[in-house]
Amino acid sequence: MSNSKLCWPTPNGRPGLVPTLSLLACILLLAISAPAVELDFGRIVTAIPRMLAFAGNLLVLPDWEYLPILAKNILQTIEMTFLATSIALVISLPLGVLAAKNTSPHPAVFHATRNLLSLMRALPELVWALVFVSAVGLGPLPGIMALSFVTVGFMGKFFAESIEVVDQRQLEGVVAQGASWLQLRTFAHFPQAFPDFVGTVMYVLDHNLRAAAILGLVGAGGIGYDLVMAMRMFDYDRLLPIALSIYIVVTLLDRASDHFRMRMI
Picture 1 (cartoon, rainbow, N blue to C red):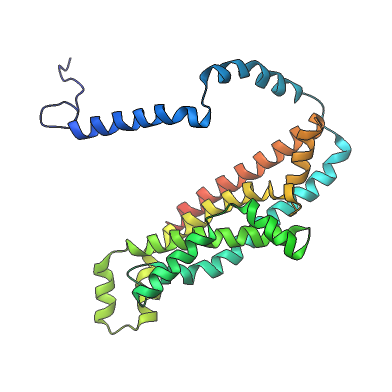
Picture 2: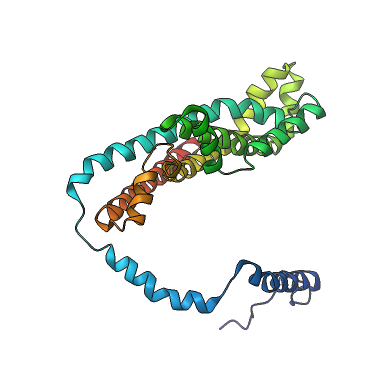
């Protein structure tokens, strides 16, 4: 039997003073700020029976006549997701290059692009969907526009961060061969950052699918309107198929993204 004991990775085997004080300070701040968000564990405990009662209402036979409409709306949600992500990918890739410190042509361009990307992701998709609905009317188009707009902000930031952490030694080797500015980005930066690019795109696809599922709340297409109305009208025979369809699509996309990303890596 080994006599070794579990201990902290410090010279004396005890937790460090600074990490301990930092952790205690965070716990204290969370405890102080809890009333501001009305965090009440008593309310959470008393809400459990009502949550179970709501879940029990879902155990009903689905509305079979609604299934064709469900298939059409969930397909529209998927189309919105892929189209918005594709549009954002084309726009965010050059913005990511301009927003990376090691690829931006000038500090002014770097800061301007970073601020633009921050502005684009500052508000959620639902708010931008309201803006675009007021501009172009109801339907999937404002939903696609809102998803694309916010996605450019996120993907541009992720792409820039992936480019900034590439191995500088490979860049020096390409520069030594007399590569131009564009060739350096194409043959040195992008190949190294490509696995991160793929992971980012797959994550954004997953996020956009769930975001597109709720944009129908403001008339921006997809399954969101049916989901919200089913909850408001207590149409449990429709609510369960909608929730299951969203879960199945998200799960399939997650499995496909894992497989695709591993092949790329």
